[in-house]
Length: 214
Image 1 (cartoon, rainbow, N blue to C red):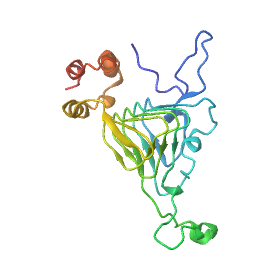
Image 2: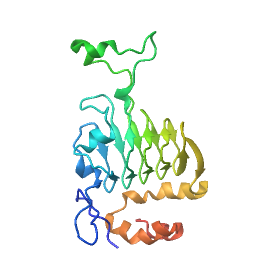
Image 3: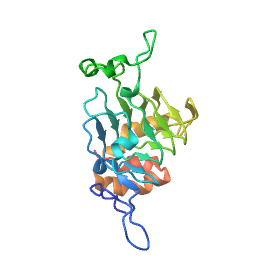
């Protein structure tokens, strides 16, 4: 089965009328933001699709800010997910957290107390209404549960839920996770990933390894 066309903004075709589903977009075709980097095949869905997907998903990520939001390939982002990036943070080392400098044009340009990037790995599923906080680093293959509030480092292939989010379990035993991370299937050529689809869907790691490029 062929992969979805990564060049299409709306990759899902509704049946029976054959119209593209406006509520699901390939993110790298729907955004144009200098501080946001999204890999191929990553999609986002929303029941009320916005005109500006970048500001919808990351409302504090201002062009020219000193942080980035980086999202890998083959990620799945559900309705209501928000990335609260570093520009949203206030200074906390003084007596007051009030951002006095932002009201002075001369001081505002160089004032950003938090400059951490927010990083999402490859093949990450972020569930309904999850909130990803500044500086979060989500490992490859992780699942973020609905409504989770994510901060810090999330290990690869972890399943996290809750507020604050906590690892509930891992999707696979550690030896299998190591094999998957070594394969990095999300970087394979598209035609090879298409051939590997049965292995990816069935969880057949031996079959997946047999298809790996030399």
